[in-house]
Amino acid sequence: MQFILVALIFFGNLLSINNSLNETALSGQQPNIGIDLQGTIRMVYGNEEEIYCITSTDNGISFSKPVLVGRINNMHLGNTRGPQIASSVNFSMISAIDKNGNIHAFRLEHLKNSWIKIDNINDRKGSAPEGLMALTADKDDRFYAVWLDTRIGKKNNIYFSSSSKSSWNDNKLVYQSPEEHVCECCKPNITFNNNRLLITFRNWQMGSRDIYYSTSGNKGKSFTPALKSGNGTWILKGCPMDGGGSFIDDKGRVSAAWQRSGDIFLAEQNQPERKIGSGRGVSMAGVKNNRVIAWQDRKTIILYHTASKKIIEIGEGNSPRVYILPNGKTICTWEEDKTIQYKVI
Image 1 (cartoon, rainbow, N blue to C red):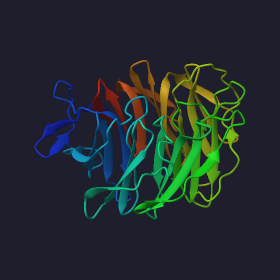
Image 2 (cartoon, rainbow, N blue to C red):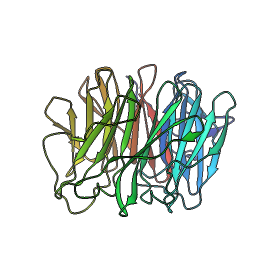
Image 3 (cartoon, rainbow, N blue to C red):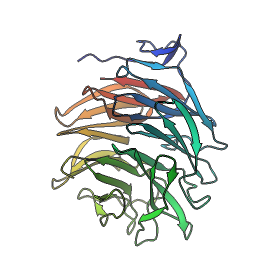
Image 4 (cartoon, rainbow, N blue to C red):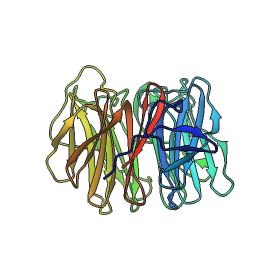
């Protein structure tokens, strides 16, 4: 396996793989990727108050020049707060939250190749001031969003909405903790596979901040009661600012990876949790029986494949996000000193 250190650099109409970071890197924060059913990769990121998207049609060998998607005044950016993207067959969707708590949305029709702003995702103005959310899509051009929402008693709980094409449906409360709120500054996650939706989030119960999950088999019309991942617990007075990663397989089995007190744990449904490393900032992707997990150990970006149980170091930075490409390779993207980095493995 060949490991290629990459930097995104301007070269004609393409950003090409380069083995050196001495070139001028692409300025931005919080990169996030959506991969459509044709295999096109779209990477979104924020740069101050501007949202950009770059595109690859060759499995990450090269990317297009950045396209300005839109501008959001006082946009949340940093610490897993930043633009999110999901792609389906004919459309892609980007979301971004301003510091007043409004979730903005932009839609791309692939054939027209032009981003347009559509209605906000949250139907209560200013209800998402934490700036933490996630997006996913199914194969039928439906999009699904989850976020931290304060409309109940000004305390953060888990809200959800779905969309087809240009409009978002009424928002739905998925979970409210018996303590009246979930962990206030950990990013929730959402993923779709084989007609099943999975939402994971860091809860707050009796002082413990553990990862919980809830699933839906009817495209978000209803969700199962939330269950805890793993068998350990983490009693913590402060917020870890680390929501972990998750995956649901073709049979509906849930996997989750997260940080607890500086250690990285993996829990696969009906199996005991196990420690796989140390660090924070966990992301997960999956396909069939393989899970790929990324995290940062101090400044080192780590990848772990459950199939091979190999841990590899791929770069330096923070906020890694990992994805599996249609050709079976892995792409991981992260930020370093407010520049965009990625590697295909």
